Length: 497
Image (cartoon, rainbow, N blue to C red):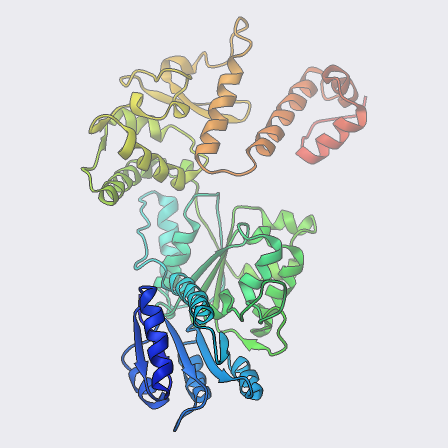
């Protein structure tokens, strides 16, 4: 962590602050005037700057103005006299984090500097990001198309919409687009719009002014300001609240925005890349996503394949993740037997690459030997609860009521539940739920519930030759209920009795 700079022509003020911060194990560096601090900024920067407002030569406001123009995320605390209220107002207009009125309580001063320090560290963490872009691995034809698209877009600033299932690596692609763009030396800022509560998302995107709402004790820069001259990646854009979509559209249209509670327009020079696992066209038809914003974002669309569309990449990814995980833990990398790789390649992992990476982390810690066999995998990945298939068996994917599982080839022909085992389907359901949960998928109950209802209604319609009223009676539900469910689930082939 960098030191806290104290700029004051009063030696006693400098001394008191230095001693108080030293007791907090915080490093400091002091200057007797603004001129020396400005000269030092050519070679280094502080974590927080504390400056008197009135000094011989350049004033604290002059220093504040220079710092905010060159280092907008650096918190500046201005020291001012009680009688100098006009200067305090000017300090806030210039972007000061807070001010200290003389004479000040030293404990309150340290508390304030601590708050500024926390804000500075948060900004530093956001803007630095990963030191380098993680590798995107893949030899499958579908991934080669993605690589070619990244190459074609390498010298462009065009808006890109990345689509693909959860865990398929959309942020990695966004980082690659940034790394190979003219903005590569500038910040890459990522924000998952689905992970931020609706009430906080506007402030997170656009920032807020001091006093804009309860708890807004300081002015805060939003992600658009943090990404200035760089790239802003908005993940899960399909979940953005409708009213915020209007504000985002305005920024994309004219490049201007306002902080929450602000009256001064700010200019944004930012490349926007968005991603979603949802069908945006469907959300537009449902009135959940603005059509004009959709067209603004959908300038170039890049579809990322799911892992089941690139099964030949699973062995490459597994080896990479096992080596990566071993390096992080400082242990020898484990290896998969051929049978285990074959087994994994037959699975439909709903969490895609992210689930595979998590699995490799689990294996590095939990697998007993250096060579990983099928029996060493988590139980939820094996076909039966309680024991794993023999590692010598071959595996083939089968489909059961819309759920694809990987089972031994010898069992594939008889994978349907036998009449004497009416609960066999529960094992498949439990395995699918466990796989989805371990892959980090959200709303598992809703997803599986829709599949369950769809399977029941489709089967009943087959038995009644499409007569939905008869099917409703057989299922024990009302006529209006089955009509609504058929429409909601998009089931074809139903007819009135």
